[in-house]
Image (cartoon, rainbow, N blue to C red; front, side, top):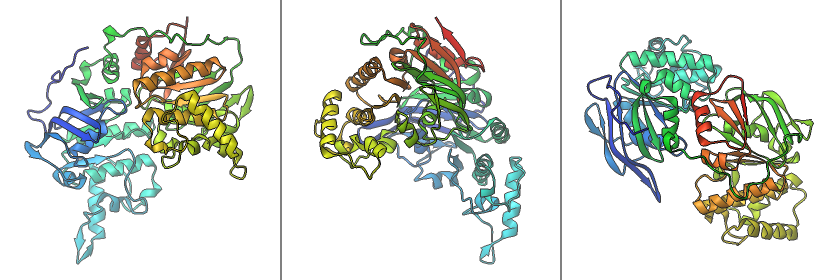
Length: 523
């Protein structure tokens, strides 16, 4: 696949929005580098890329949240530099985010016109407000009472109200940032109906999503970013799904190499061995459709898929961080209830979150304190871990994982990303788990630390630990997994169970989606 910035035929003579050479830098990080982007009136344009691709940064640069280090933005032919989202909105650029940012205690009409209420005799004109709100709701075909409390409506309706608020101004560009992440199929259909109404009215819609089926259903063109750099701009009808996946992941299909397993990889487990963990029909509405999953002692099961495919959602269900509303779980052949992380820990399940700073480590505590945190939680705070036990465990795992600096009193927030990840791993290994769930354990760390963690994973499996491994890097998943479960659009679409799994094979399944029933592909 070759890059193509000019494949699409412009649906209008001139773009309503043009970004040229946009670069955004933060201390030590170049979030966007020399990115071009065009948006035309009356089109739906999808912005695509994995985590860290620069999608959010581009939106924030456009709306004035971040200042561009270099480049220019032209809106309606004029060079602009917005001081913030408010100024961008007044100019005609409205953004609706994934999390509805409205006031549930106010009425629908009050939310739509908040800050722009019609006035009469020094106060708000309630009658005019209701009439104007009804007109805006009618414009997008939304039949709800403007006087009803926003909080009385489901999230899907609240999101549509947010769109009505966005078009309350003379909107020319509507940015929808992951608008379908919490919607079911019927709610997505209603949202798409409204998007098409606005598109047909000449509004340019920037649609950010990780659901490929939805992108192909609603968008006219798409732009792909990767690592803060523009990969290309494409007409949706002219870019195949497999080529799109390749563009997002950064691999040319013609040069994809079969990734050999690491020399230290353990012997593949016996198929006849009873599963340590068996999940049957495990699912959560709006997060992931029911999934069957088995993991055996000494086995690494990889979860592969694009951002939003359901990888993390499944991991959180297995750990009790989120509560499943369907299915059940067995550990060692016994049905268990994993309704909380504490219940999961008690059953020998450990979970390293992808957000090691927000959900994993406590940056202002020491390495020692972070390392024993899970063990102490399992014992209960009334039974503190003796200091000599702490010191012995800390010395052991600092040495085993080569945590640097080898100072148990160092604040964990001062460590490099790779060493922070090792501390998080050590915390859970101290609890001597039966099953270790690793969600993006090598993200954001250097090559050396990444190799160390990959080697550790294979060694732990060789010692009999069951591991669920999640990574956006397909080569990494393929390299160390005995079995790979492929997910797409919140459902499992295939299970690869043979010794010669290739990245090509996984990418093909991600692109085409498999069949509604999970394909089991064995040698």
